[in-house]
Length: 462
Image 1 (cartoon, helix red, strand yellow):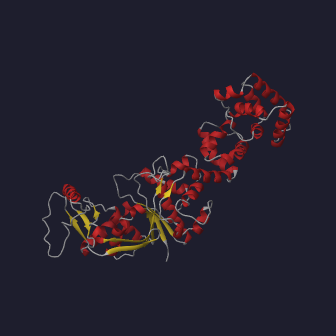
Image 2: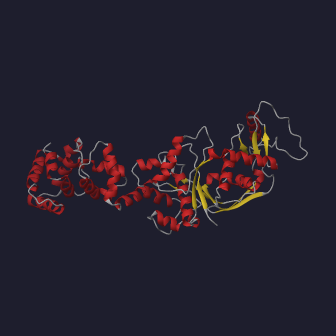
Image 3: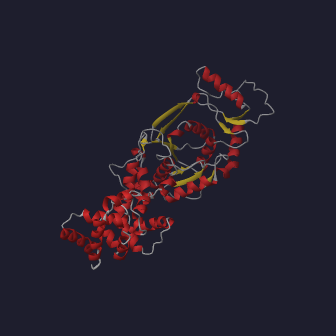
């Protein structure tokens, strides 16, 4: 079998973490099996679909390097194909015109709920043998409903959930074309998966209720039925539904918040799937290892600390030159002109072990390029006449040094030893003046990177 998977988002909102995980698992399964991965934009909801949302989907997939095979498919470009097959179903007797008004449907629903019944279309316009249908009203444009079998069951072996069985009697006659003639989601999906030869439908488990309806449609069209894998939802850390604060915002927000694409991919792959005890792995390893045997059927929980930990891992292990290409534009957005690339790379090397995202990283190394203003709290704590004079004495002596990182650091050790003070006596005033904070990596390496002229200039301000 030539395996074909698809990612089929609707451009009616942002592309969120759950959607991207679905795309990732679909992509990985196709790559594992030397198959094809399709991107399909399900944009038949004309009122809610927007060009901006389509661009966000494309940008998110590009940022994460989840490259699709072939062209992007758009459902709005396939309307005639859908109408052709709807006509076929009507001719076969598998679909029919329904003139039930919205008001009638509301009344029917209210009555069924009052009587303790499951709300369901009652089939009043469904053609049956020896059944006399009402006269079609002139003022109502009909919808087209699929004639769902009244008995039997729909059963499939879900690759995540196991065997699922739903009785046809629980389903009503699905609307496959609206009153304006536009086809509905469930019908378009069926036709697309058939025409595009999709062999494995991988999607969220909120679609499980759609699956028996779609299988019935496929059977009526005499089309092959794909295998299904319904992924469990992702919950927030408190076990509730994801909010915009926790994971449900656009995937591009993670880019804007300073996360690396490889970290997001790695984190999402582990969110509901595992390969032994492996925590860190490349996208190539993912496509080599991925299978549905290790996809959990229970809900996964979003863990911000875990995402930060993985992002920190990739930042720590990324070459400084590559990080510089990512951080430089962020500094330039702050009005910083990078004159000396070596200063940027050296600052990155000094800080990268401690940073969890590129935004914090950029903020932490900003003082290398812009003289900071220490907060009053730190000035009151570390700077007085005595400490400032002590720093100036230090600067005068270090100015004569042969300027290397090791020489600067060794000099500081010898200086405090000679003066008979503890290291913080010089380090904390220096941090406050030079970096505007009391929390930095090795102060000697910071002094080396900035250079003696820069250090003198900053100290002269006090």
